[in-house]
Image 1 (cartoon, helix red, strand yellow):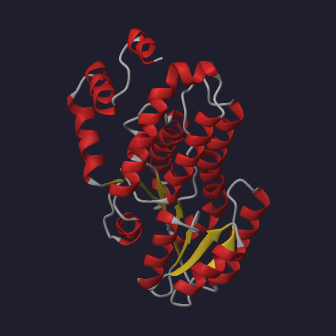
Image 2 (spheres, one colour; image 1 turned 180 degrees about the horizontal axis):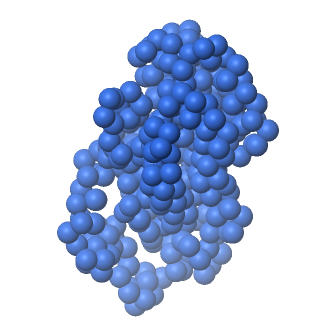
Length: 293
């Protein structure tokens, strides 16, 4: 195991950082993608010394190409066990009010960035029979209101992964999905700040139509961030997907994630909509929205 290497994108904080350090402690040679020098230094200092930071923004084609070349040269006869596509952002807000440039940014990072990384590292993965582990979200299978850009991007990652798993089977390149529920990670802290900014500068129409819903969503995000599982738990699922003799195709992480998927299986769509509205404390009719204003 000590000669095997793995690439982890989005390793500066949260799930990516926890995964990079966990795999490092297991004895793998980790190439950890970060965007800032200070994150590279902090990650390296917390590692065993094997971990090697990579300057890597998954939306930068040149950096991806250089990273793949750098990893290929550094392997020196060892094996690339896999790539963990974790880099991502979370854009939230009502569908009709999220600016199109924010929709594009969401998909450029979470979807195009994942595909770009896979394409760049695919020759090495095919050569070594490595694995692809894509960090998705339970939201990719159980979409929720006020975070449509984020869950839509994860839904796309789910579809791409399912297709890719079949396409790459002839070469023995496995593909697995990690589907966490609530995780205590900075991605939601950033989302909360974005929500506060949206409300602070919101036009009257947005506040009137969705002000209450946004406030509820922000409280929910705060609660989930406080109660969510630690990123290290997700990291253990990633390690199993990479290293187990018979890995699963999907890893659902967290009690809330399992509960949401159970609801999806047993409830018709409109019943599920009612549950989401009631649990979230969201208005259930135009009259209810008007009464709040």
